[in-house]
Length: 307
Length: 149
Figure 1: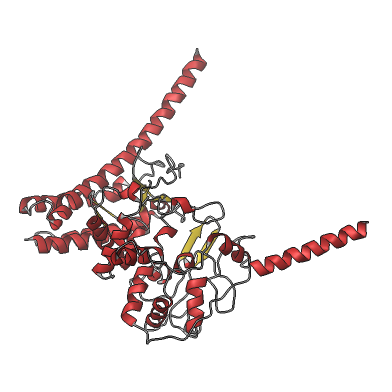
Figure 2: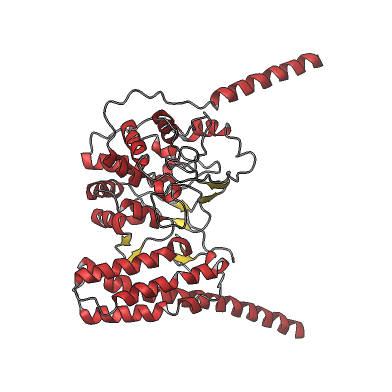
C-alpha cells in the first residue's frame, strides 16, 4: 500500500514538474523576413517613445545615447541592474540577430532562451509592430558602443528563478499585437499605440498586485512608486480631468503643468525622451490620454513614516 | 500629583517636538513654493502668454528666485522626518542621506540665474531663461522631490 502511495506521489510530482516545465517554457516568436529596409528615423522615434534611454543610458553622465546600462532599479522583489544594450559586440547587443532583438523586446526572451525579468517592460512592448521593433534595432546599432557589463541582479529566492517568469507571463502578459479601434480617429489610434506599446505608461501609472501584475481595472489610475518612495499619479480623467488635450501635449514636451508646476522624479527623464518626438505623436498621445474614462485608483498613504 | 505633572509635561514636550518638526517641513515647503511662484506663476505663465510680458515683474521674479535659492541649503539642513499635512509633494529622505550631493545641485541653479539676470528683454529671452533655470531645478527634483499623491 505504502509503496503504491509513494509511487503515486512520485508520478504526480513528475507530471507536475512536466506541466510546470511546459507552462514556463519560453515561447519565442518566429520572425518572418523583412519586407522593407529599416527606417532609421522611425527607429529613433520608437527609441524616444519607448524611453529606452531612461533606463539603459549609463547613469550620471550627460549623454543619453550611451546605452551601457548599470542603473539600479529597486523593486519589491529586489534590485535589478539594467544591462548594456549598446552595439558593443562583447558587453552589449552587437552580436545579436534581428530575431534575438525582436524576441527580447516583444516576448521578454534572451538570445540564450531564458526569460527576462518583467522589469523590462516587454509586457507593453509586445503590442508593438514588428517593423517598428526592427527599425528600433537598426537605430540602436547606429549608437556608440559602450564597453562594460553591469553587475548581476540582486534578486532573492524564489524570485530569482527565471523559469517562474514563464508562469508569471501566462498570468499577467498578453502576446497579442495592438488592435486599432475602427470607431476612433487615426490620431487616437496612433496615441493609443504609442501610450500602450512603446510608451509603456501603464507600467508605472497603474497599481500592481502582490505578484507584481498590473491590476487591470485600475490601469492608468496611479499607485505607489515601484522604486519605493512617493506616488505615481492617476492619469485617467479622474486625476487630470482639468487638463485640456493641449495641456497634456505641452506637458509631454516641457514637463510644465497647467497648474503652474513642473514634472518631478522619474517623469523628468521621460519628458526628456518625449520632447524628442514629433509634435504629431505627442498630440496623438494627448488625444488618447484625454479619452481615458475616470477611474479611482488606490489611495496614497496619509504620511510617510519618519525616515 | 507629581506623576500627573510629569506625564502631562512629557506629553506636551512630545507634542511640541512633533509641531516643531511639522514647522520645519512647512518652512521648507514655503521656501520651495515661493520659488515656484517666481518661476511658474510669473515667468512660466508669461512665456505661455497667459499673462502679458512685464519687465518689472520679470526682474522682481528673478531677484526673488535668486534670494530664495540662496536659502535652500540652510533651510533643508534638518530632516523634519515628516511631510507637510495633506501635501501633494514632499522631500525624499535621500536629501539627508546624501546631503552633500543635494547641496551640490544648488550652485548650478545659481549660475543659471546669474547668467540671465538683467539680460531678459522680451518673451523670447524669457523663454530661454525659463528653460535654462527650470532644467537645473529639475536636475535636483529628479532625485529629491517626491510626488505624494
